[in-house]
Image (tube, one colour):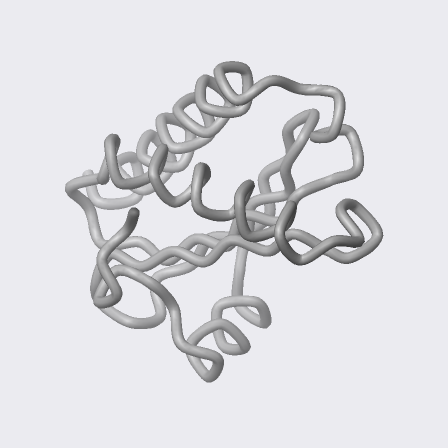
Length: 114
């Protein structure tokens, strides 16, 4: 699980959502910005994707766990929004997709720093 200090609050979420640049994948829409000046993430699983809260929470926790394993070094704020296509994927596939998205975000952030 991702530590609480590495998660976005509601106010931070709204600010990141407004200012963010968007990256797409088959299962996620990722919005990223650097609003908080720290490393922070949020995961959104819409009710249209999983109507039951237990399913949404289970998926959210597994995504936070994947992010926690590959915590970036650079200060970045990201919002991972799940798409309906995520239902057809296994946890291992989701884990690898999160890893690829984090690598892409870090490459973009690193290129701006350099």
